[in-house]
Length: 429
Ligand code: SF4
Ligand code: SF4
Image (tube, rainbow, N blue to C red):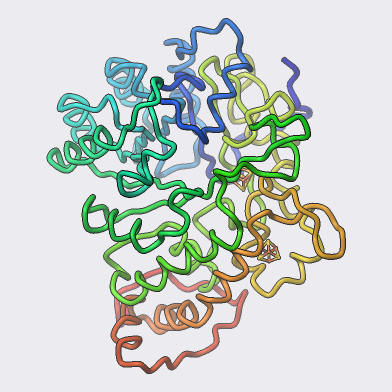
């Protein structure tokens, strides 16, 4: 398979990077109807789709040797990583002990559908401080609309069982909810379900955007049409707005919605915590089961193959000119419509994988979700300014709640691009 890694610098990368590794490649025990990754199985015909001990050790050694630290993420994704079995992850912990540098903290994260989790898995996660991401799309009917097993059977009960088990064992976990046609009109129901019935404090929201090419094929990042399952742009905006309005009135500081945290960082003038809202990207690469490294989890395609970590050092691939160009292209390809947009500072055209529309003046590269993001960011401008101002004055963002409850919304306009204040700081410090 051709690599697009060209000239390769030596030395450590300038900034922290994140490797999402896929020890089973695209192999999963479910058959979620919208999953873009199941298609990736075709990239490796005849493969066993199991990360070898050599690749596992090489990955952990190279990340721990080359990451600038002090917090080093070791991330497992899929497919479904738990299909590797618990011994694979026990070995990872031994390898981490072997290669850990003094003073470095390792944060193990694992994204799972939860189906295989049991007491033993949860004990292991707790003992080793794993942060688990559990995929759950809301109440039963909304979750089961698309998240089904290989036999087409619903999975809601199994995922809820996994959530209960993790709570019992005090495993730290967040919920990853994808937004699509089945749950996109029910923001408050989904949010209250996650908060009150699942009892999670950490929520990630991901829009489902499945493109269809001219031959009716899905998953090739081609075409300007989307499947009926995909969330619609305005629906996405209403979904975010609906949750935000409840969150900002009662849950600031107790429930953490990743998208709102990232937005607040933008209003404060700090770097956003999500690559999709950053001006450039390219610091989160994807590692396949055989050591192939790709530019991003959303671009596991031959054109974006950087090389293999068994034959070229990971650090060089992450810092390579093609990878830098991949990240810089996010800004370089932004259409004028976005460059002149009032909420560009928070949106930056979102992820390039969703930029497949024409702007009103006919320029390519407008994000499919633009209408939703524009409406959402405009809607939250006032409360975001207020929270940013509270933080700048050394107060807490959650002080917005009594202010909103009192019906008075005084706020100071925060000058965008001015020096960032701390995201949260103790009053008086
Ligand atoms: S392509 Fe999208 S998901 Fe990938 S790093 Fe860039 S912004 Fe993030
Ligand atoms: S809201 Fe739309 S126009 Fe504005 S930066 Fe985002 S994608 Fe571009």
